[in-house]
Length: 149
Image (spheres, one colour):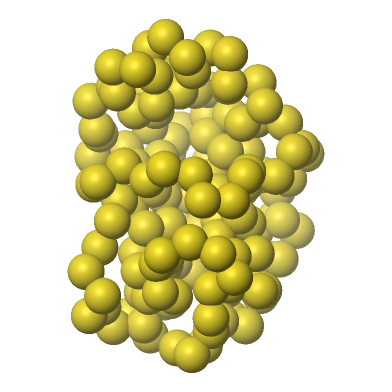
């Protein structure tokens, strides 16, 4: 299973991020390419424990039924809801967000298991470091596919 503790998977994601341009067009959703990168960056920061978000109330009830699929090889569905803390204004610097995305992916990989957060995911709850590595890979893969790379 693809994840951010696998060097080949990390390299593949970095190459795909490199293929993004400031004019890359979304194939679904509302975010522009810089917003998408900022969205992914904050998710990676959360996975590394740089901050945490309180659990979403409804997640406590329905997440147990959805967690297995979220961590499976099945790609994320299009147009999933996004937490308000992960939505950004339109006037972001694309190159800055792109550089930060590559740095965040590499920091997660280099930090290894000990660099991963012990905080729960705001929707899915408790994740092991390996589950965070799978989930974050799938999350970024989803958004890179959203922009055709």
